[in-house]
Image 1 (cartoon, rainbow, N blue to C red):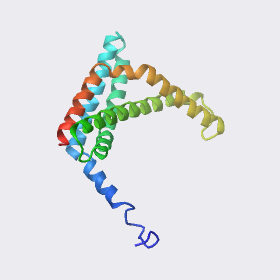
Image 2: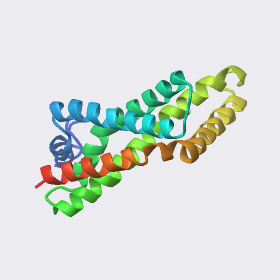
Image 3: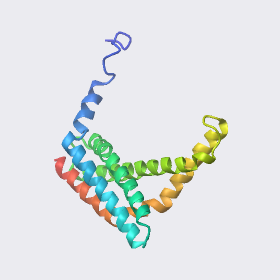
Image 4: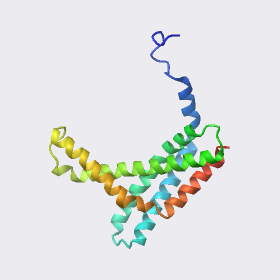
Length: 177
């Protein structure tokens, strides 16, 4: 059947939809994994802040919540990406794919949440929405937030977050056999 004759409601690539379904975590793994990964990332942030001797409990809770949400949101996406990359491959490949996917998704989504919070704080001093000035302010505020997170936020994943990352990747590699 030619592309022109194909119906609009048919998927463009039925193999991709099937691969996504098999790579995605079950609902039980997605919920439990998101909760566990989010708690591990929140605990990592708390431990890092305690080691740095932060004294304001309110700010520690805010940062821990940000890291919890970033981790919880990242888990199902990272699991699916790792599953897509490691279909029927060796456990070493599964470990590496999960390690990279979970690290990148966790840092990326937590940085995105941080940038959104950063943007909302500075929004009252920005130009009216959807103007050219506002667009520049929006982009550069986001870039500054990403830079700040890269410099100040990523270190909060060490040492507990890194240990949790290794454990999660080992668990994924063991399940993918």
